[in-house]
Length: 127
Image (cartoon, rainbow, N blue to C red; front, side):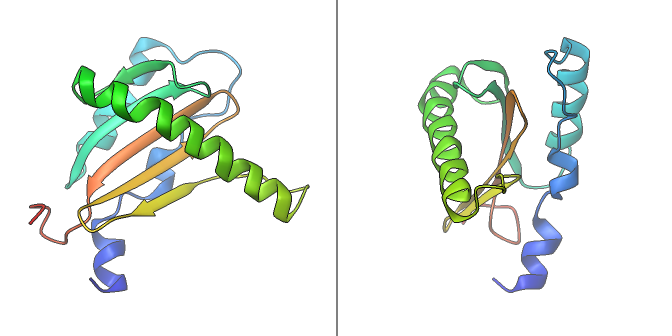
């Protein structure tokens, strides 16, 4: 896959941003954000959770959500620790991971994590 294809098929980080706030998002805000993100081609799932991995909203099955939420919250915490080790004045603002079939994007906020999983193939077919 070339860089142009990655840009064309990827959800823009600005799209996955959740407004910074110490108050929990309302159900309407969650629904609007998730609906906006899932409308992008190739998006397979969205999880909104707190920093400990407690799920507020997910478009995945219950089994998939349980399997992913805690691991992704832990991965984000570890990546944030690495960012701090590299520069104590820095912080993790976005985490993106590619595999052969999927791309996982995590947008951490002060209190919440927004996770978007999408197909990483240019056609969006997964094969």
